[in-house]
Length: 398
Image (cartoon, helix red, strand yellow):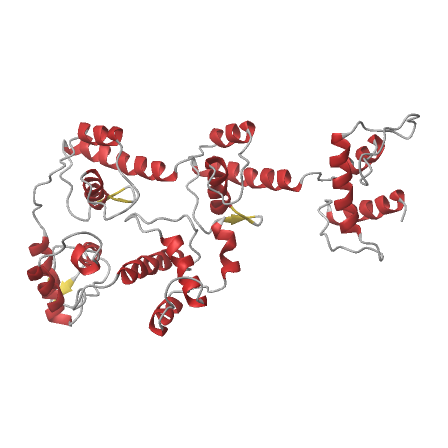
C-alpha cells in the first residue's frame, strides 16, 4: 500500500479514537495499520540520525540502512493527527501528570500501593523511578534525565523512601518532645499515624547494634538529632508495663477463654477495663513479636514470661522457625493491602525483606530454590492470597 493510502487509514483511526496509539496487531480494512505506525516510528528514528529530505530534494543522501528516513512533509502530516514518536516518553509524561495531580491534591507522593488512575499504578511507577535513578532496576544501566529528576523534585519526590518514613516518625517524636519535655512515651502511643513508642524502641535497637540482622543502621546525624530531643538510649522501665497489661489480658481471658480483644471499650462482667481494645491488641501483638516467641534476635523473653503468655493463649509452646516469622509479616501485609503482591524491594519496619521472601516461596514451590515447601506451608500461604503465578506480580516488582 502506498504511504498516502496508509496515512488515510491512520487519519481515519485518529478520527474514531482521538489518538494514534494504534495497537501493534491492529488491522484496518485488511491492512496492518499497527505495524505501519511502528514502522513510521523506526523511520522517524532514522530521520533523526540522517539529514531530512523533502520531495524537492535534488541530491538525496546515500541510504545508510534499509529503513528509509521520513520526509519533513510526512512528519508534519503525522504530527497533525497526534503521532506519538516515542512511546516510552509518552508513557512517562502520562504517569508524571498523574503524580503531579496527586501531589497538588495531597501535598506529597506518599501514594497508597493500590492507587491507580488511567491505568497508571502510581505507587509502582514512583518506586520504579527511584530504582532507575539509583541504578537498582535489574538489567537497566540508564538513568533519568536531569530534566526528569528536576520535575520529580518539584513535586516532592523522595529518592530514599526509608528516609521519608524516618523523617515523618522523627517529626512525631519532636512534636511529643515539645509538648512534654521528654521522650518518655507511653506504651502503644500513636501520633500522626506513627506508633511512636515502638518506633523509638526500634531506634534504640538499631543504634545499639541489636537490629536482628536488618540492613538498616542509624547514621551519626540521626543519633545526634534524636539525642537533641531527649532520646534516652538506655530507657528506664516503663510503668504500665508487662505486668499491668498481662493482668488485664488475663482477666479478659479468664472471663471469655480467648484474647481477641474488641475495638473500643473493653468490659469484663460489667467492669470497664482501664485500657481500650486497641491498646490491648497492640500489647498482645508486641508479645507475639517478641524475641523469644519469634526468635528474631539474640536472647528473648525470659522463660517465666513465656510461660505466663502461654497460659492465656499467646505465643506457641516452642520457638517458631524463621519461616513462621516471615509468614506472619506476610500475613500482616495481606491484612493491610488485601493481597500478597509484594514489591520485590519491599522491606518491613522490622527489617524483613518481605518481597524477596515471597518471591523465594514461589521458587521453592516450583523446586527451583532451596528445599520444597511443605503442604502445610502452601496451605497457609494460600490462605492469605498467595499468587503462585510470577507474571501476575511483575507489575508490582518493577
